[in-house]
Image (cartoon, rainbow, N blue to C red):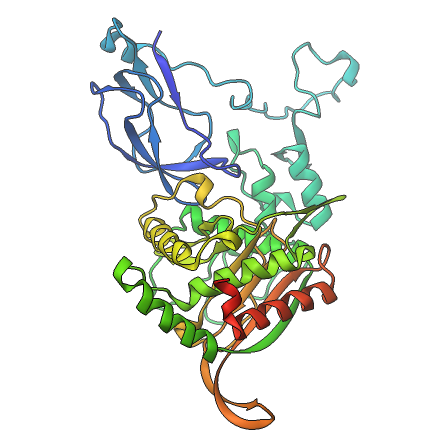
Length: 438
């Protein structure tokens, strides 16, 4: 029997992915550890390795295919001594019960009222396996969870397109839907709206005749949209801003770069701020936390997720245990992580996790902004540009290099006073930066 190669779950949140590219073809021999394909997940494009040796008998899913569910058979592998041609002609193994398609719901027929549930034929689907919502003559198939979410949000399932087996509406379809409104929108002058553009829950663009291009969203961009929407809807944010004088930090950076020049290390301001945030979290552990329903996790080390812009969106590689690392080591590690992030080559453990985040938009001249918390983390630090400003130094008005930093805190887990204490510790470390190298 050929071995089924299935779509892997390359991240904890991955439910489906895009088979971006096959690096092998039918008839190729592979060994354990060989790179077989590139798969675009909800986080990045990752390499998929073979776990067995054999011959690629058949490729079941073509490269470029989107929305391939985890567990779907994507190829068949013929083992040693097995005829690859015969293996290729063999039917693909049936999917496991967890991923098997739901049988099609029979169309309702006119006739007598259905018999009581007790007399339902053996093997019929129960209500726990499938929830049917009927509207007039149209039957809508939705999972029980999707039905509950829709009811809670006031979403009309008639306007939601299902992405599950046989068009079944699942959780992800409802979470991305808009709340239904009873009134039909007025047509736009000069162009009537189509039923598709006005249906509840449909994210349809209205064509006003303006020249434009259309680009399909990547899995990463869809995930960013979903997670940030969930964060703003479910996490009560509190924002605290401080102005920080940078002159001492800039002076120390210059001195350190001279000392590290022979080692090929060049520190950025961001490297020093990563260290400052990590040490501040260790000094104020009430902010180095994660809200978990009826529990609160308090971390004993600070792993800093750093926002990095890449062509397909945004990713947050992690500097682990940044509080105990030398700033030179942070700089070297951060350059490597950022480079591989832009190439889509990060490993799962290099961008999954983190106890807090740092987002720096100072290089774009942004003076101050409020970042959205990256769940399940409890806070994120937003860094603005350092600029010359009038500033009181030693009770006299002077010109100083000042930046604004804003902490966004999950108010379910972090009280305002504790967030203020963290911002105070961060400001003191940046303004007296010898503590970063002590």
